[in-house]
Length: 145
Length: 71
Image (cartoon, rainbow over all chains, first blue to last red; front, top):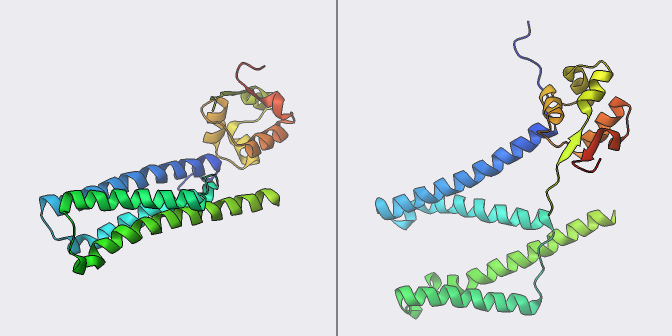
């Protein structure tokens, strides 16, 4: 006895699935950010209690951007000079903003203050340059085949 | 990028061949709904599917699909 009509996964179904996944990814990220803000600023929970949420959100957002950079293969690869300028500007923005808000941090607390402000932008700029280069290489290899 | 709309005469070709939507869907390996949406101009198929459908209809690609206003 046939209980269901036979179904087939075709290109339209797959395309709809990708569309739904992209929308739900965005919704999930926004909701997770909302949960983090609610717990931090409404419930007043300490930072340490929401590290897992922050990690999941960070992986989701940066993973998405990284995958887009890699699969797209069309993002401009920065020159060394361009990367340095981007790094200095980003570090200045992060460090300057934090100093304006919190004041100059004590040097003994460097691991939680200066290090993230200096290393964070370096990781971001480096990861961008690497992914853009790898993505372009991958695409050029496919075109060459 | 310019947005282009596609038109097709899939329904005319299918009916002329005496096929139902379900039969054509079976031959092309897609769902009946996809065939219905293509015929209604609500879904733009991939080039691969266009070629498959053209083959099943015994017509060339440009006989079956064209850009709106260009035929």
